[in-house]
Image 1 (cartoon, rainbow, N blue to C red):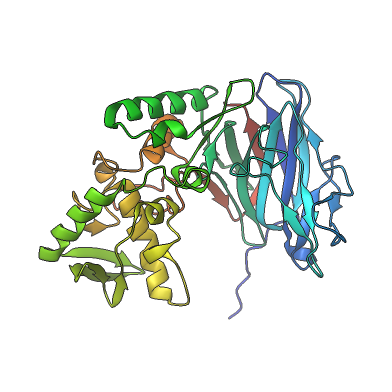
Image 2: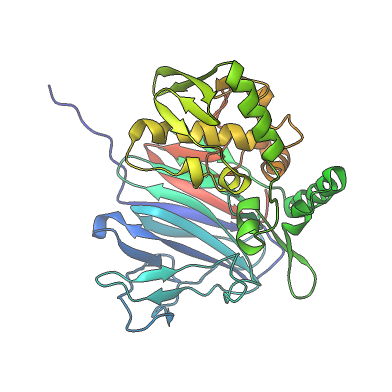
Length: 379
């Protein structure tokens, strides 16, 4: 018996709405064009024409097309059209355009994207941010991300063929300032200067963005040194004498601590350090070819970032267990306090849902999308 497979349209209209107070807001769309052999893709300034850059002859070559999509005056909207794209980003900058560069890459160039951890990057002092998406033959999936930093508020609204609408409203217009104020309060509360060091100002002294702890450590390796040590010690002690359970791919695995290692099922995880926890991709959280291990890592990394392991022996744990310890990822805690509905991606495995609730990571997705609206500046 044959079965028809869902298939989206080859293109999707996206409305860009300027809710900032600036008349100079620019959008860029980047990714890999799925229907063109995953070629490096940018959308040109008309919002319709694809640009597939060729590999340049030298490092740091400029784009050979204008890809700055101007949104117009405050309150203005304009519609762009995208093809199927993998690893997509919708970027926004305020008052100044962004600089994207190209590096040689054989058959395909390397796209040099803006960086918040490289002080010599031409975009470092520009006010910018992005949302992530993948649009393929099965669905549109998009999320607002604050895994790297908080800056411009971005909101998403996705409409499907039945008229259903999903929304993620993200940060309010004053969200950046609120996050910064709460991080300063956290430094006053626990004396950890790293929380205040997450605040990045522009050359004129205005608050520009707030970095995640992971990116702060890239710039200031001494920040948060040993921050999680006492919490880790307590976790290792607790599970030396008790058991941890993990629900992975429909299986219930038992965990414990043996010889200072966390054993879950048949997998052994060495003691993490603070940088491992904040990055969620180093030390015991490094992924590889072992599928079961790769499925356990998100739960374990999320449990440490949310500091749930002393109040719950389950992974995933109930929502009420999140961020209850004084030693926790306060950046992530505060981001969830400030974003609308608590929805926003604040660390790499923030899409691990609580055992008794909905996803916290702030995404929209649908297999029959007809349009999407992306609002910059708060809703």
